[in-house]
Image (cartoon, rainbow, N blue to C red; front, side, top):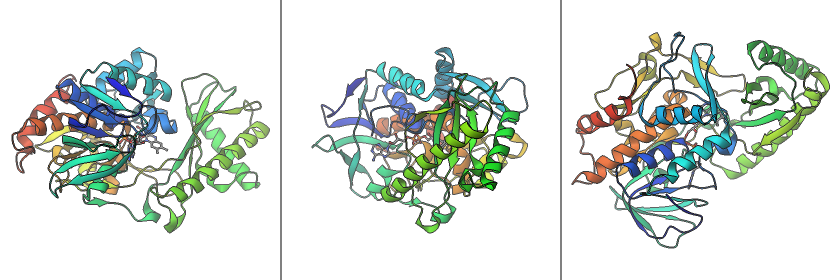
Amino acid sequence: MQTQEQTPSKSNYDAVIVGGGSAGVAAAIACAREGLDTLLIVRGSELGGNISQCLVHSISGLYLISGDVVPHPANGGFALEFTERLLKTEAAMGPVRMNRVDVLVQEPQLFSLQCTRLCGKEKNLTVVFNSTLRSVTSDGAVIESLEIDTQPEPIRAAVFVDASSDAKLSFLAGADYEEADPAELHRAAYIFSIGNVNLDDVDDDSRFILSQKIVAGIRDGSLDPQLAAAVIRPTGLADESSWTIDLESEGDHYSPLNPECLTRLQILSCQLAAQLEAYLRASVEGFEKCLITASHGQSTARESRRVSGRYCLTENDILDGVEFEDAVCRSAWPIELRESVRGPKSKSPKKSKPCDIPLRALISKDFDNLLMAGRCISASQQAQGALRVIGTSLAVGQAAGLAAVAIKRSSLGTIPLGEEAVVAAPIHEKILSNIDR
Ligand SMILES: Cc1cc2nc3c(=O)[nH]c(=O)nc-3n(C[C@H](O)[C@H](O)[C@H](O)COP(=O)(O)OP(=O)(O)OC[C@H]3O[C@@H](n4cnc5c(N)ncnc54)[C@H](O)[C@@H]3O)c2cc1C
């Protein structure tokens, strides 16, 4: 990897990936390993996206939903390789069973470190940090180039992958997208860690007791009602716990893409966290000396734009565990809906069957050389409630990277309509090959 704080040294690549989260990292590594001269554009100074920026502590979607004692990976390929790496380096622990699903509990900074180390091994990959996508040019059917704020020259490529979670690349190109009405969007949330806690275990019992204490605090006026759905999770460290506060909607004024709205939510988040810290210290056994130990002070949106692809995954696809001829990987997480702060509404797939993710959901319907990876793939809002999790984003990212390779190698510079199934088969095999099906 060539890492550049500021300017990439050249302006022509085979593939450009925007967004250094789980999907972008997986896509970039997949492209580079197949020999594509690849550029990964990262807005901040760390890889890991939402995980390192917002302290998401658990990885969902890695395992099939089942009651089996030993969880089975939902996808092989990069998702499995990265999981094994996290476990081996003690960046994560688990799998941990939560009702009928299994998650890995990970340390966000170590997740980011492992992303950097893996990218560092790829000689065909250039990573440019602290760079924000500014503009995109196209001829109406093909994206030609993009500009970032740290380089004066436009950057050209044969194929582009939008892994920016907000679909910024697709938006700037003028691609069609969907976005839910403000009042129906999944609530933004704020994650922080509270340390110096004397708690034996963050298990279901301790979670229940804490939520009862919080309800009592709301009733006697010590706590803001928005803290009703504050959730505690283990962090992997003995004396630390991670907290998530879902933030009350601003009704029609909520916009995950509006900086003023995000600023208001960020200030509110910090105030709520401080209130909770003071209350826990004063009222809850084991928390007498607790302190907020980690916070990026940033509230985070769970959803924004979803790009329109050549197929839009639906709620029924997820719940029925639909199989597709052009499947590239699988989704194995329940639909989680969070339009209110009263906690998630969950809908599990029938018979716990995973749903295939078709290649068509990763290709923009408007641009032949534009692929989507991670949160912004083509899906209804309900379906995205299942697809957006990190485990699935890793697999989708790899699939988008391998599809980029297919586009680059195709003499047409695209995947011709109707050919998706033929192109998808090797991608699917590559991602699923090393798991026991
Ligand atoms: C509060 C909260 C809790 C969550 N909890 C869990 C959980 O417990 N388990 C789980 O598996 N998932 C969880 N998720 C979901 C998960 O974190 C994300 O959906 C997942 O990280 C999506 O990965 P991604 O790569 O698509 O996007 P991201 O990780 O968001 O990465 C996208 C990257 O693109 C960058 N970017 C955006 N615009 C630009 C631009 N213009 N130029 C350059 N870069 C840009 C962003 O800075 C970011 O780094 C949670 C999400 C939230 C918000």
